[in-house]
Each structure stands twice: as C-alpha cells, then as structure tokens.
Image (cartoon, rainbow, N blue to C red; front, side, top):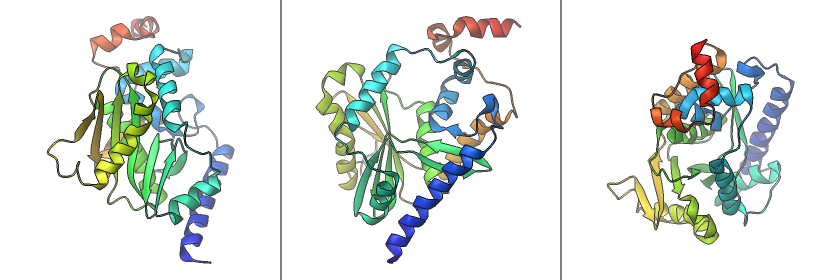
Length: 266
C-alpha cells in the first residue's frame, strides 16, 4: 500500500472513531451538549444571549435563515454526493479537490469541535481555502463571521492537516441575488481562480467584488483562532456567564428580545 493510500485510510478511520466516541460520551457541556459546532461559535460573537435563548426556548425560523438555506443549496446543487471514505480518499489522493458541506471533527483541549464548512479547497492533500458563505445585506466581515471561519481552520489544524498556507474566505451575497443562481454558484470558484493567479495576494485589499458580491480572503492565524475559540469554549464549560451584545440595533431587531428583557429583570 502506498503512503498516500495509507494516510487517507488512517485519517478516515480517525474521523470515524471520533464520531463513535462522541456518540457514547456524556453531555458535559451547557445544555447537555457533547460537542461545540462552528456555527454556534459564530453566533456567540454575534450575540451569545441570543444563542442561549435559541437553546432555551427553541430556534425561531426567520426570513434570513430561509434565504441562507436556499443560498447554500444553490451553491452545492451541482456537487456530487460522496461517502465519508470517498471524501477522505479524494482529499489526500487528488491533485486538487473541492468538498462542500462536509463534517470535520476534532478534539481540542478535551472538547469536541465539529465544523461543516460551506466549501473547502484542497491542493495536494492540504486545505488551501475554507469558505464561509453569508447571505445578507450587511457585507462587512464581522468578528462573528471571522470566528466561525477561523474555527474551521483550527479544526483542520487539530485534525493534522498542514495549514501553513491556509486562507479563509468570507463571501457575502445580497439575498436578492438568489434569483441568479449561476452567479451564486460560480463565485467561490472565481475566488479560487483569482487566488491561484495571485490576484488577492498581490492586492493591498483583502477583498474583491464580483458584481454585487463581496469576497474577503484572510490568512489563517492559528493564535488568533485559538483566542476566539477559547473564549467561546468558556461559556460552554460554564466558566463564565453569558455575554450580551452591546449593539442596541441587534437588540431592537432580535426575535428573542422579550424573553431576554424578562431574564434581565430577574
């Protein structure tokens, strides 16, 4: 067996083993959780109190959530489904490989982290760009978006991937563009193409516009990612109280504001 085949089989088995361990483990984190997911880490940086209310009273489906689901479905509709085994073989044996909506799992400081990046572009078995897609009228790359994307990078590192050349891209799509599904689907691959041609690296900006779509590209910083994820983990372990956003606009527009106000009065 070649070293290439041996490696993908080893990593494939490691991932399956972690899934089995999690399934049998006790839920020692907040709300009886056995693991932390990347999207929750991003939500913590948006407003941790809102995330907490989602767990306490249930998630309220909003138009933004519906648009996000629809947008993500548009992007991956041309991808072919693969098994876990096929995914790992592709990652580590193909010259380049793109994998969408795939679950990666690792153990970090005795905490299980699970990430499902919107898209990961691999070259020679190494993750090169991790994508986070947002369908929003707010095009800024907020800290919440950074933290979620960075958690994917940290998971890649802890799994054992070479992340020296890892970048993460936050692509913000105006919801109105959902009608133009071809534009939505092709943008991540434009980013990959431009990255490989050095367009991002040779620019003074960390973003590029593709019409009304704004794509950011940032070098993954392991130390910064750990700082952001460590703060998030403190909440799940019960090491600190829940934090509320300082943005009055977020509070005014929040679907949980009544419940949150009641909690503050107790």
